[in-house]
Image (cartoon, rainbow, N blue to C red; front, top):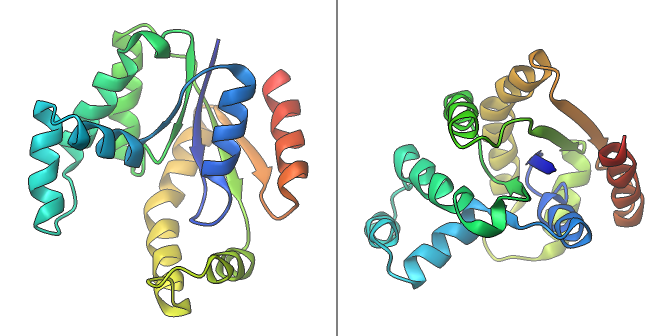
Length: 184
């Protein structure tokens, strides 16, 4: 049973790789952004709550994100495995997730850290050409990511759950390395 958490800076290719691997393994790719959008679209009680934060330009609070993740992991398609992308982002969320997974008998997750140097990531994100992606904004996002997520990498390394993948190679090479890691 494959349960993976994907970590990595913006632009490292997490979403793409998680999607490809999930299709290959026939398990859901669970992106917190996707869960949020889906819950808001379906107007679930949690979705309605989340919408009010989004509409006022606020960040959706941790507790609400955690509730959404819990709801999603309890769905039937997630019983045979999953890939989580975009959660946890902080050690407090990782601790919550660890407790949740034990409670719903889904522990044994592994963590894939897809890393790439800042210069590579900045170049990729600039090439994407989104309006809000100026070099300054991208570098700020990377700073925030490194500050918030570095402790998370140590958290999972200490628990012998961390698998590191070099994101500074072609998409095919990353996919191939991931397949080898997961199989071992």
